[in-house]
Structures are given as C-alpha cells and as structure tokens.
Image 1: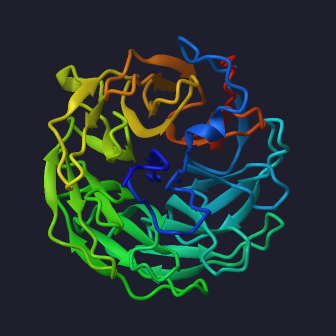
Image 2: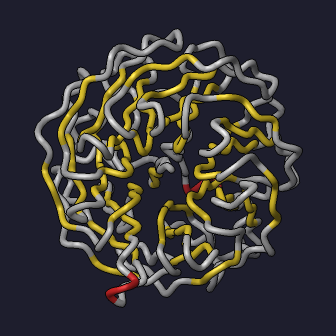
Length: 400
C-alpha cells in the first residue's frame, strides 16, 4: 500500500495532521494531512532555499504553548487555536484568508492545557477541540458551534501529567478517538470516542519514562493505526502497534537524539513507508544545543538508527511540509532558546539540508502548518511561550 498523504504531524504540548494513517475522518488537526498536490497549484519550479516573510505576532492569553489550525467558523479560511497554560484556556483567532488573524476569543479548559486535537468528534459538521491538561490530569472536549465559538469543557480523566494529544480512529468504528502521552506515569492513554463527543474511560499502555509527545500512523502496513511516543528520559521512541480494536501491543523502543521531546511521522524517502523525525532538546551544559533526528521505517514497525541534523537552539517541536515546492518532505522545528523556526529541506531520499532560520516570538514551543493566505503554499504558525502568550505567523514567500 502506497502512502497517499505523506506527512503526519502531531501535537505536542505543551502537538495536527505513509501508509493509511489516522482513520477515515476527513478533518484531523494534530495529525496534519498534506498532499503534494495541495501545495502545487501554482508550481513553476522549486525554491533552492526556503523563504518566509517577517513574522507577524498575534496576542493570545498567558503562556501560549501549543497551536493548531482549522476552519472553525466555516468561512473557508484557516483559523488558529492556541492553548494557554497559565490562563487555563484556548484562544481562537479567526483568519481572513489573506494571512491575517483577528483578535483572540478565549474559551476555558481544565487546568494547564498543553495540546490540542481538532476534529468533528460529535459528527455535527463543525470542528471541535480536545485539549490535554497536565494540571488536572484530564482532557477537555469543547464542542464547536461552526461560528468560531466553543461550548463549556466536558472533562475525561487520563493518567498522570498528560503532555500531548492526538486524534485518530483507533478501533475503526468511524468515530474519532484520542490518545495522550502521560509523563508522570510513563504510558499512553487511549480514549475511544462514541461519535457524540463523549469518550470511554482511558485504557493505558506502557512506554518508557517521561513520554512527551506522540504521532499516529500505520507503521507496519496492516491498515490499523499505530502510535509512536517520544520519551524524554531515555531519549527513545516507543512504537505501539494497534490491532484495529483500540488495543495495542507491547512497546518496541528505538533510539533517538538526546532529550527527545517531539515527534512527527512522514515519508521522508518516498518509499511508501512512514518514517519518523524527533526534536531533541540536547544538553547545552554538555555542549549539545539540541538537534533533529531522522529514523527511517521498514514498513514492519521497525526503524533505523537515527541520523542527526542541526537546527536552532533547543528545538522543542518538529513538524513537516513541502516548503519549497519540490514535492519532497521538509522539516520545521520550533527552537525555544533562539526564538527561531528552522526549516530543513528534504531531498526525497531521507536526507535533509542545512537549517534556514526565521525569527518568531519569544520561546516558540510548537508549530502548525497550513495555507493561511490561499496561495497554495504551506505557511507556519508558532505558539510562543511568552507573557502575554502569542502566536507568530510566517507566510511562505517562495516563488514556485
């Protein structure tokens, strides 16, 4: 089976869209869906280097830690949803289709939201939000009204210190489910959705210590959704293979870079098999400023030893897109200590070029990829963990 959508990115806290990935639901953010054709309507030839306009900053609430995208008011334009840890809410900024965004409207969650999954969880045709909340050990479901507003949070308990969330159809019933990584208990919680916005009690599956982020995809080609969880403590990635009923096998662990903190899945070498990339914090006191690691998949749920690529200082988040129009997957990282976003162009063989860096706001903590100005090219938005919190928007200016 060939991969029809090549990049899969997730939410990390504080993750949007291989082989068959994340079920059959058409609108998933946290698992980021990108098709080469969707960025190539005006393609004249790829850019040799990535190019973005200077960042425009938009205020959110306090300590913005995660950003996701979706069309929340159904006007055909991409909007932003930003999780704010210190103010215990989500800011929604409506886009106008030119790359500009309106004033934030805030909607309460449980305590310390750090990740957002976007999808139609109650099947009413409107996009909803589910946040992971590490201060209250739960997830908050917020039903969207289709006009940019969201209902009061309905909370479901998970394990200790959820650090990220992703949505997918884990049991193949046509309803969206969610999964969280839980740093305090070293496991992943699976919450099966009923298609009405409610979730069953969490079922937990062990990974290694301090899991911080996860990605969903079919890593062994059996048509079922699997999970990759990145573990900060041992600097590893745990693979949980799904059986299509919402159950998962024992974790298989693969090495990554020092201080592994975020993960994205995509087909880096165009072999029809999902690969992984991680963002690694490193250890600056030991002379390691952080890095990105690339692990190539074999289609059977196994991954190669990591190759290492330099990014900015302390990359905390990694995502993917085709930023220069050559139809190869590229990587982008949010660099917490250098207040930049790094873009590394892929060559379609699993190799990536040197980082090009673009300034954003203070302490960027996550990234989202979408076409904010409707020019057919992927743009970037960051969540900046500053006070007040902000989202920085980078508009792609490559001429391809």
